[in-house]
Amino acid sequence: MLKRRDLLKIAAGSFAVASALGPERALAQAQNGGPAEPTPAQFDPASIVDLARSLSKKPYRAPTLPLPEAFSNLTPEAYSSIGSRPENQIWAADNTGFVIEPLHRGSVFSAAMSINVIENGFERRLVYAPDLFEFGKITPPANAGDLGFSGIRLLVPFEGNLREVAIFQGASFFRARASYQLFGAIARGLSIRTADPRGEETPAFRALWIEKPNLASNAIVIHALLDSESVTGAYRFTLRPGDATIIDTECTLFARTNVEHYGIATMAGTYVYGPLDRRRDDIRPSVHEVQGLQILNGNNEWVWRPVANRETLQGSAFVDTNPKGFGFLQRDRAFAAFQDDVAHWEWRPSLWIEPIGDWGSGEVTLVEIPSESELNDNMVAYWRPKAPLIAGAEASFAYRQFWCWQAPNRPPLAQVAVSRSGRATGGPAGGKRRRFLVDFSGDIFADPQRASEINPNLTAAPGTLSNLRTFLDKDRKSMRVVFDMDAGNDTLSELRLVLEAQGKPISETWLYRWTP
Image (cartoon, rainbow, N blue to C red; front, side):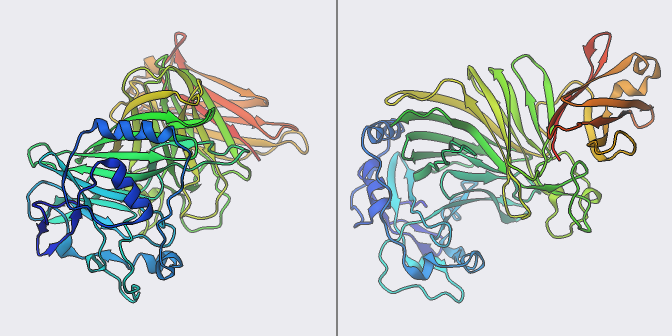
């Protein structure tokens, strides 16, 4: 979505670009269509903040740029056959370290997003044309006009080819990956009333402004305008690809109405089953791209909360002040854990968030949504500030995302390597008795003398615990904790386990919610 010169030509193809005459015109053209403007406009990052602020003082107006039926009724499979022509890739010939592809509207990606490029301090809007795309067996309608785009794909040179590193498409969704990974977890710019009985509101990026990078920086800057019924926002993303792809995110939110329930640094991913809740008849031992939620809270406690695919919607809140990090991690990295030659769940990224600055009081919220589909992002986590957004108010947040194999900030403690559960025999008739196994791994277990001082601190609320045992393996540097839990007539039990020595934790805190 960029062009060079007034008309700009890129590689063998060319893109028509028009001045937005300021961000507000770019937004209007994306929402309603309209002719291209002839004159470039100077870009000022502050103008995105000003536009978001101005927009928040006006009634919400949904985009009205229509999408022809030939595209709006596409199945996901048919939509996936539409691709950008390679000769039209933006910046491919400029040796900037990044290539951009515009994404066509269609199927579930029906909303228009204005795509603007910034070169030499001037912004220009990318104008849609059907010859930018290959449509396969789809026949595009004649004279459809400027349909706009649904988002962008970012590619980087990699081992002699171009490789996708990030995608911004659909509402405020975006995803990224590190070298040698497949796409997995997805992030959102903002979430509002997720899993709330009042219904979820879905903010969307209406426009992007992409600064032309230079090869030396190995970074690309993307500005975004967010809009919804309740909130507008100005975003700045700085993306750096590598062994871990890092996205620094800065946002300023403006409230149209009072918003009591909203989420910052929202992420989502797939979890169908694993060793803790295997209820599916499947040849694969596990199916998930998210294994658990890791939290480093404001008190420097490391928490590991395995996720689960439950029979009913579940929400958990981890109250905190000034969290130091949290994220969805995929700890299993062995093919044997999944045995899936197609999906390769072991190649999916972990997503770790490090707040920049103090976020104050709030909670890390985890939502576990029942799902039988491997295509559903049924695990959701985000930071929910305690203070609501009041109509007319502004709030700013900044954080760093790591799309990685391993989170950069890891516990200096023994970590949970395996969590399993199964039916336990015995106990009172009709009791809900389960057996749990938790393996901790760490160097401390290689020293039998030090390991002899370790005791498991285990609680269940509600529920009765019994048959607690530990097994030390100094060669594997691990300690296994096995116990039984009987919930009696209760349908929920919160389990907590931490290994301690001399009254101090030597492991991360394992938390788990049992439900039938």
